[in-house]
Length: 92
Image (cartoon, rainbow, N blue to C red):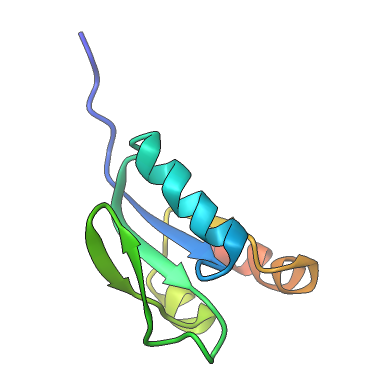
């Protein structure tokens, strides 16, 4: 008997960088139960799109991502940003 995993809201902070794009590919390849992807990047990338599961998903800023209350947040945006924002995502 196989269990159906719940669909999760997943934020990928640094989604437009090389590591972030690789994270997206791994999530997709491993069939991680992403219900809503929240790609997060710097102000210069907000409004752009990343591809995930055959769809174009709009990139948002970190404040917007936090307000969407993701179940999981993955960080590839550098140590300083991660140290500042990871606790805020964990608290949310």
